[in-house]
Length: 252
Image (tube, rainbow, N blue to C red; front, side, top):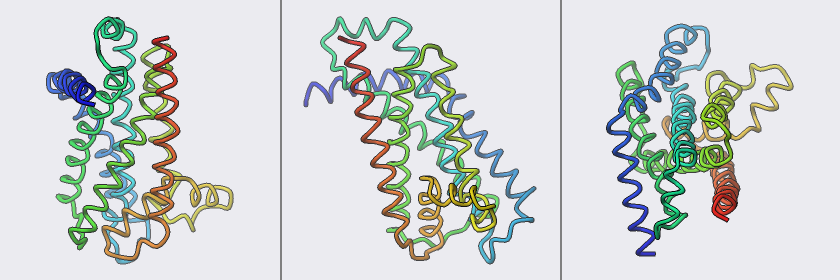
């Protein structure tokens, strides 16, 4: 365990230096969700009936999920570059844990996405986002977002390990970015036609969005929180296992 932690720390520091030298990756990650938020709030928000809830508050949970889905594309790209550029083979000649190699990318993804999420929430506050959530509810929001980020990061790890090109490594994120648009993130699912409404109500994003929104508004979260946690844990476990199988195959 001591060796694993030491190796992970060294590799994590290496990756963070790459990000610090190229801060445009974080700016780019936050730019698209911010643009979507401004578009929906100032162009489409007036046409959407969200009752007494300001539209920026209504839509922020979905924007946060899009931010993460956008950010993990860079995780897949960095991992693919390590695997295809020869650095991974060099690491194999050293007494470095293969698990530490993957976890360094995972931790880097979490840190980079947290910075992007802070930028998005900061702008949301500027344009009118307000919440009466208690400290406990904020901790719940942070916990769910960290778990969601961790789960999607392992999806990115699988994409980075399995891809044959850098375009293939990043293309997987496009469906994930699009998924919140067919959910309760921007409009109530009750306004959607039958088949679309059914898909929107039962796909993973809707339960996560509803949970975050209720936490922000101070309303009961009902059973959505357990559904959201179940989806996040299931995605995390499945893709972490697949990632371990892929890394073992590459090193066999």
